[in-house]
Image 1: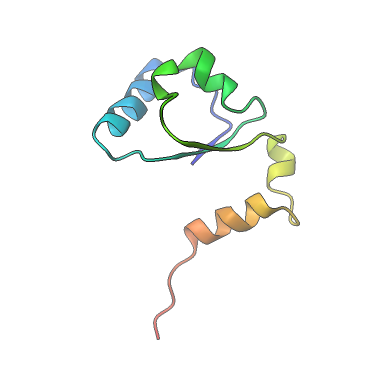
Image 2: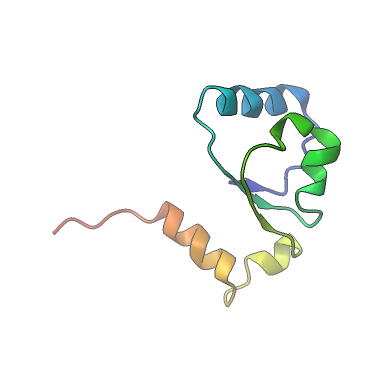
Length: 82
């Protein structure tokens, strides 16, 4: 999940590219007002990675009534033991 990252750090971009090439990065969940356009302009090597975009402003993406907040919570929920 990429939240508010502007893809301006080459060493981080390269780590993402390396992870994708190694088969460890299968999809990018991108919360960024400019959406996938930021990837296109800053790190085009990641354009072939499937990308789920949330392009509203970050403050709106995690509003209490927004689907993105629910999705984020599910990612970090601990499984309950039965």
